[in-house]
Length: 134
Image (cartoon, one colour):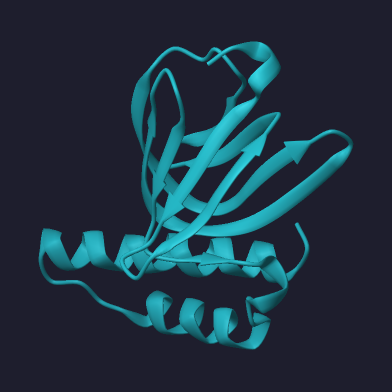
């Protein structure tokens, strides 16, 4: 990847390739914080969190809700595998609040159930942040 070519970004969900584009930079929600990718970034693989992916191109920024998954940075492209990719305006605040209420009420009895509850909580909180414009 040369600096002049930008970053080739491919986003794939279980259904299809959702996005295949060039951009100047990418910011991703990782499970442990935010991660920025510029042209020439060293190869890596990481686990995505729930939240906003930002694609910057020139002075414009495109935002998407990423529903967890994985990212792979190669010499030639950035590949994002996620359960869902949504425009932020399509995230329903009332539905996110209901998801958070349900996840909060879960009473796990096993470590596996606790992990599922924690995932549901993180997902609902991220959707609420997105729906609130944060």
